[in-house]
Image 1 (cartoon, rainbow, N blue to C red):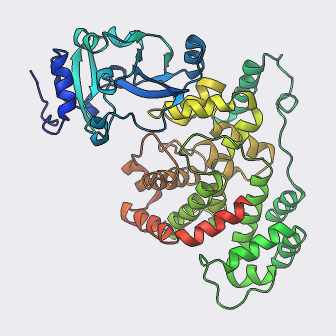
Image 2 (cartoon, rainbow, N blue to C red; image 1 turned 90 degrees about the horizontal axis):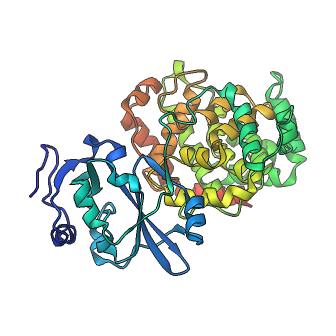
Image 3 (tube, helix red, strand yellow; image 1 turned 120 degrees about the vertical axis):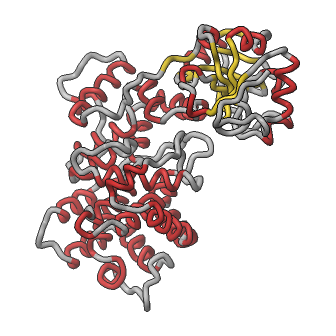
Length: 462
C-alpha cells in the first residue's frame, strides 16, 4: 500500500526497490524529501576495509564517528570508492537504506528504531519512502546495531564571532594533545613562518607611494616568483600582445600592479605551508581549486555595480587563499589529519566544518582566519576566510566571504571542489547585487579558459 503526497510520485522508483520491499512485506508511503526533517531520515554509507564491505545506516542529522567505528570493530574503514556490483544501484540517484539490495553486512544506529516513522531514500533524487519503525526493523532483520554516530549540534561551528577563534583553537589543541593551558596561543601552536618575499610584499601593500619599480625589484629577488610572474603574463589566459621581456614589462603591459602584488602575496603565503600529501578521495587538488576560485571570484566582482565593488586585488587573493586553513589543519594536527580526510569521505551528507569541529574542535575556516590575523594580513581576508561557508553572513567586510561562498558553490556544481549542499540562496545574489545570469556568465568564462587556467595551476603546483 502506498500513499503519495501531492509533490511526490512513486512512478519512477526502481523495481528492484519495490521488489525488495514487497519481499520483506513492508508497507511504505511516498514523500518529497524537503518535507521530512533530517532527524527522521535514514542516511546510508558504504565502507570498505581489506576487501570487506559494510553498509552503515545512521540518522541524516548524525555524523559517522569513524574513529569510534574503527575502535569498536578493530578495522580501519574508509569510504567505498566504487559502487557495489548490484546492477540495480547504477540507475539510482541516491542510496536506499536496504541491505538486501547490496548483499553485504549492515550496521545501523539503534536510534533509527526509536522514532515511530523513518524515511529512506527511494533511489530517485528528492523522493523518500516512509516506513514505520516495525517495517524498518524488517529490513534490518539481519543487520547489527552499533552506535558509532553522534547528533550534529544545531549551531553551526562557523557561525560564532571571529574574536572567539583563538580561544577555540587553543582549546582544540589542548583537548587533542592533553597539554596544560599555555598562557599564549603562540606557545601552544607552531605558527608557520612567513617568507622574506611575503614580508616585503606585505610592507609594500601598505605603502601608498609604492610603484611598479619597487614591486618589480622584490619579485626579481625571488627567481621562482619572477619566473612565474612572466609565465602568468605570457599565459593564453591573459592573451598579452607582443613579447614579454621582463618582470616590469609583465606588470606594466599585462598584469597590472594590484594583480601582481596579490598574486605574489598569494603564492608566498601558500608556499609558507607545505601542502598535505593526504586529501579526501575525489576532491579537487589544492592549487586547482584555488586558481579556479580566484578567477571566478574576480569575474563575479566585475559583475557587481561599480559603487558596490570590493577591492579587486583582495577579492582575487581571497579566492586564492580560501582553502589555506585546510593545509593548516594538516600542519597543526598531523596525527589526526588522516582521520579527518577519511571522515570527510564517509560523511558526504554533512558540511566539512561540522566534521572538522567534531574531530578537532575547530574548523579550517577558523584556522585560516586565525593564521591571517597572526600574519597581520588585511582584515578583509580574515573575514573572507572565516565566513566563506555562511551565505547569510552580513557583518564586517561581508562582500568578501559572500563572493567566496558564491564562487565555491558555482564551481562545485561543475565538479570543481565539493559541497554537501549546492543550493545558492536568492538573498545572496540580492545582497551582492549580481543576477544569477551574470554569475553563470562569469562561470562560463572561467570554464572556457580551462586550458589557460590549467597552465597557471601547473605553475603554482611546482
